[in-house]
Image 1 (cartoon, rainbow, N blue to C red):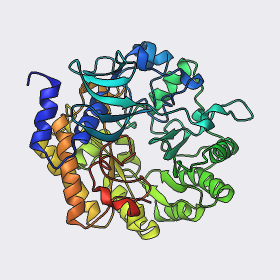
Image 2 (image 1 turned 45 degrees about the vertical axis):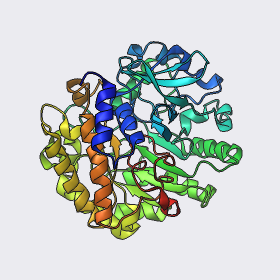
Image 3 (image 1 turned 60 degrees about the vertical axis):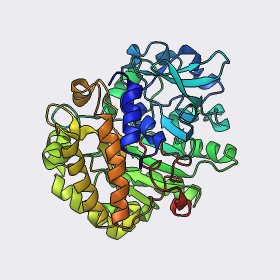
Length: 440
């Protein structure tokens, strides 16, 4: 194919059941986007909500390699609309790649647009600075540092433990840069709190609740690195759970409470439920047994793939199958040198995993893999997985859900092209739009 545009248009033609918006969104998520200086934010002093680096870097370069984008942060997300493809409103998480064929820049009229192969393909909207970001905690910390919001303000992302106790080459997940992201922010002198104090979290949430008068923020996610021993004297269930308990006591019913943690034993999962958590995300990362063992060595060593899956099924008995939503990292199936070498094989494997969980009423979701350069898989696969894999996965995902009579999972906002706000993959964009009533 002579150009990126030709590849994208070919996939749109071959997979008409996948919304055209999702084809562009997946390409931006897998390969990143470059920003003209005219499209960068003024950090926390401007009118645009800046990228918060809420857990991973989600960039194709380290901060020193991003140039001006390391000094003036890009926006947290962008919205694509209109253009020659008549795109419906599409929210895309920003992953910076200075060498991407996609570029966000201001046109002659001063309006931002997305350009591909030198051609303007859509208008670009950027998130306005929310009023709650303009206020600080009593100790001077910013709300963006303690309780950033993503998904166009829908989700408060509480990374309360900024590092992971799976550490080093023999334990870290091979696609994950949580520990490096912590190090690079500290090296750059940016505020990046390792363990967030529960009172600081509550204070930040009070500011959000006070100024989010339209109640745009609907859910919060508690997450962070895996805990294999203890943090602040607490095991994993108690550590993440005690934040949920404090939030639910202070703000009963204000937000949908979600927790991303390891697949824990039944008694620990029950504690999450008792603390007030409503949705549990025990992420299984990659389905194939060999790849799980290679790419998630710490999880394999401490828990093991079979036990991990058993615990996911057990947790459905506590939370209800609909409220157990494990994530996988879409694309690592094709990562060299160990991954599948054809899209057919990769899709067959991933679909096997989808069918396994969906046959039990559990609806997984996925994040589109961003090959961060400080990770082993990112280093070896700077281009990520083939765009065709991502498009075919959307097709397989929707058809598998239909096979088992499942609807979009709760806590993710509305589904459907033009409606979805979930920004780190297109799975919600690719589901039917007539399910808002089920969206939580």
